[in-house]
Image (cartoon, rainbow, N blue to C red; front, top):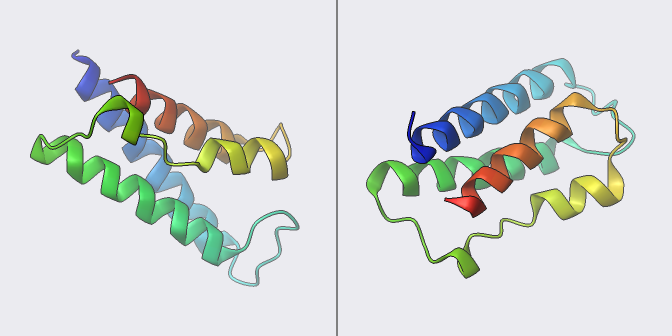
Length: 95
C-alpha cells in the first residue's frame, strides 16, 4: 500500500471516529472538547483528505493542521479518538 493510501485510510478512520463521537456527545458532555471543536477537527481532516484525492497536497511546511497540539495540550492521554486524530495528522504531514 502506498503512503498516500495509508494516509487516506488513517484520515478516514479519524473522520469516522469523530462523527461517531459527535453523535454520542449530543449534550456536549465531554469536559475537554465541544462538538464545535470536533466539527472543526473533522472539517480540517476532510479538507486534507480532499487535497490528497485531488493530488493538490501542499508543501510539507504547509501541512500542519494544528490538531495534534490541541489534543496533546487539552485532551486526556487515554482518549482513543485523540490518538486516531494525531496519527491521521502525522501521516498527512509525512506524505
